[in-house]
Length: 264
Image 1 (cartoon, rainbow, N blue to C red):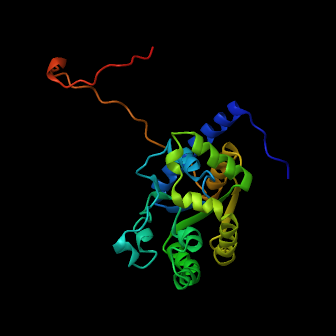
Image 2 (tube, rainbow, N blue to C red; image 1 turned 30 degrees about the horizontal axis):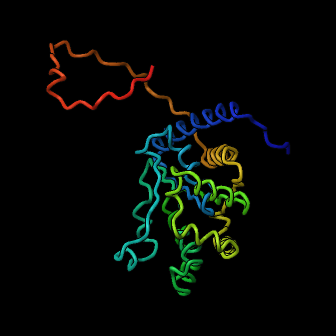
Image 3 (cartoon, rainbow, N blue to C red; image 1 turned 120 degrees about the vertical axis):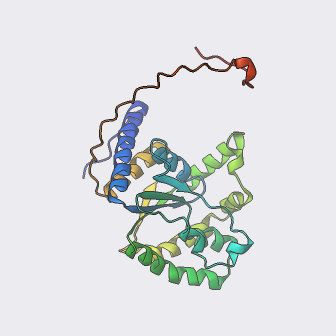
């Protein structure tokens, strides 16, 4: 097998655009065939999950391909069956849902940070493969990615967030604590893989120290997981505009946003 193709910045942008065109074609196929697709993105903090998801969705229709990033469960959700709030987010026919973190929170952050009991954790590890078989038997295509970032690169990205006021909000107290528990998280990930990396629902590991490479590799792999064909679209023609006379109200009668900038 030959090595990876080496791209410069211009080559990266060209290849990303090509892959995004293919994502639009995949989107059209999902709608045409009524497919139901779930893609899970897991990994350590700063691994690049959010940026990769944005590259997938920035050219697609949010009504077809959309991101789900659930927050901390509320008091009512804490009393529900653990998978219940995730089930509510599963796709209908003609949809792809991207989970930026998923039900695997229980095997990772909840386990390491003590947000669940040992009994709840063991029940999750026992039930998760069965839950995934159930949703797959219902017709859902399930694809799971683990974005793997090295200790040194995570440290560099944490520092970059500290130094950048536009990114500092990304550092929650839980994120900072996770940095101090690197080995705990590594062991939790290994235990999770041992129980949930199955033939029917495997984990795909993506090396993510280089964000651009991560995006291209993951999107390319994702496109390979769902056989699709190009859907012929009817040619769209613009209808004629109404001929009836219309006079716009004077601007002075409207509350206009001040024109502070003009780009030429």
